Image (cartoon, rainbow, N blue to C red; front, side, top):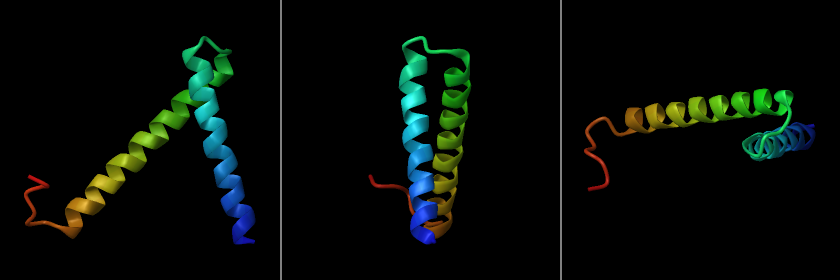
Length: 64
């Protein structure tokens, strides 16, 4: 069952990436909408990961 869920997520990710590329080349409106949703989800996941990393190392100053 978990394999089916992971395959579904993989299909959605690949499809979203394809729509981002297609929208950049002037694809149809629905491809631009899917690309916008994909990029927004990516930004949210990236921000979440940053918050999680900061929470794990509250005294850290970075990689400098």
